[in-house]
Structure formats: C-alpha cells, structure tokens
Length: 186
Figure 1 (cartoon, one colour):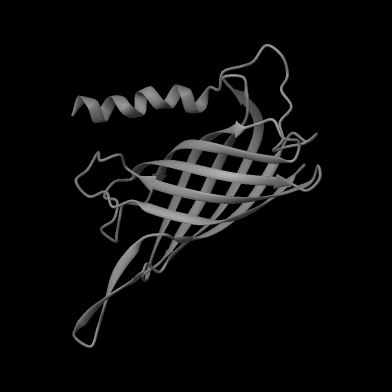
Figure 2 (cartoon, rainbow, N blue to C red; figure 1 turned 60 degrees about the vertical axis):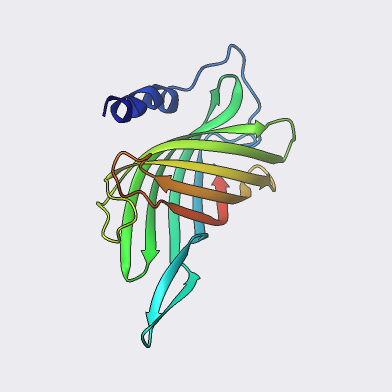
C-alpha cells in the first residue's frame, strides 16, 4: 500500500519541475519558436477477443486515440525538453475514455539539427474504466517518439504511447498505441 502511494509523489516533482540548465540549450523540437501545438492520432497495438456465431476469434483491438497537445520548451537535466498538457480521447469497442494530463518529454538524441528522438513521462486523470482495462482514474503515461522538424513551423513525429495505472488496482491491462503526430510551432 505504501509503495503504491509513494510512486506518484516521487514522480510528480520530476514531471512538473524540469531541472534548469545554466545556459540556454538549442531545442530541435521547437527551432526558434517558443510554443507548440500538436495533433496526434494512433491505433492500438494490443489484441482482443470478439465473439461471432458462437466462436471466439482473436483479432487486433479496435481502439484508437486522438490527442491534442500544447507544449513549451524546457530542459530536463540539461537535455532539451518540452513540458506539455494533453487531452486525449480513446475510442473503440463502443466505449470512449477521455484522458487529461501533464507530461515532461526530453530528448534522448538531441544532437541533430532537425531529427530528434525522445521519451516522455506523464501523469493523467481519466474517466473510470468502463471497459475492464484500467480500473482507476489516475494513470501514468509513457511515450517514445521520433521526430523530424521540417522548418521552424512544422514537425512530424512517429510515436508509441502507453497508459497504465502502475498496478495500483488489480485491473491494469493498459492501453498501447502507435501513431503519427503533426506539430505546429509558433
């Protein structure tokens, strides 16, 4: 019980208060801009079961995600980063889930001018599960991404996204998505 309560408290300062560097860092995600708006769309990478005519067939899950993101440049232990706010809707299987949260994303490969690759860690609040996958309103989110900035105004990212509750409840089948994002810097 104590372990599950301490995890959010330990992660919260890391996610909301990025470490500040002594000198400015060029941020390949933003170019010369200071704000970013992103539209992401993806499909599930999990499997599910569908019952038809008395038999159960294993098929790819019919889940999708659409996500809006607003971000500003930051640093995370002197690595180029972005602090972002997300609103997402998970759709499919005749159910929807709305997810809202904060994420700190930082670059793992920051040395290229237009290409970048990174990792994001976030905390989210969502509707309580109605599909038996994640039986909690509080969730964690991880994102791996590979991006290319076309110019100072537009970027595109390929990403893998994971939502789960870190086993704070017995039901935690998680959501996993892969997709694309279109980003506008301004």
